[in-house]
Amino acid sequence: MTRHRILAAARAVLDRDGVPGLTVRKVAARAKLSPMAMYRHFADKSALLDALMDDGLTAWDEIASSITARHPIAWLQELTEAFLDFALTKPHRFDAAFFLPAPNARRFPDDFAAGRSPVMAMVILRIDQAKSDGWLGNKPALEVALSLAALAQGLVSMHRGNRFSSEEQFKTIFRTALRHCLESYSVKPLGRK
Image (cartoon, rainbow, N blue to C red):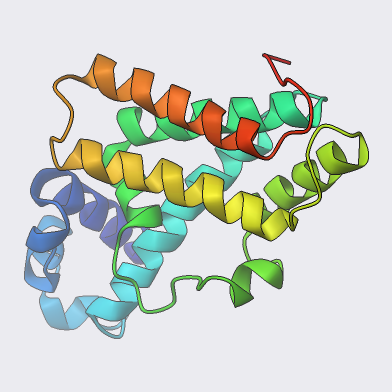
């Protein structure tokens, strides 16, 4: 129970103050605990960062797992839309999943090639299926997946840095860029599936 209270407090501090303002003292105060009491549940700030990252990734895994499109290209298109929605509607959980400097963060390419990311494993499965069905060329699925992920995260990072004139402009550019990236690997017109 106390661990959940600490994690909820850490989410609240992250929501209010962002990553730079996330301190053990602020989280402990928000959880109504002493910093020393908090250390019984999280050995140090690194352990807290790992827990926040896992919490964000769990939220992302649940979102990706709820996509029901059967066609692999439609699934990938829905996933990119879900990624955009996650970034915009749950920005701090998104940031915890993808931008938090957590010590146990998954590393490219080894962790992803080894299947340590449930969502990336789903993406690779859909890419391989699209390749088998003749929709995508024969580039390695991990390479295609990394291109899509890097582009999506990069654009979100630019949005976080106020590099677009509006949220609408960001959403339009995000959707267009991800569509063009996926099309660059295709062997026939993709359209919307």
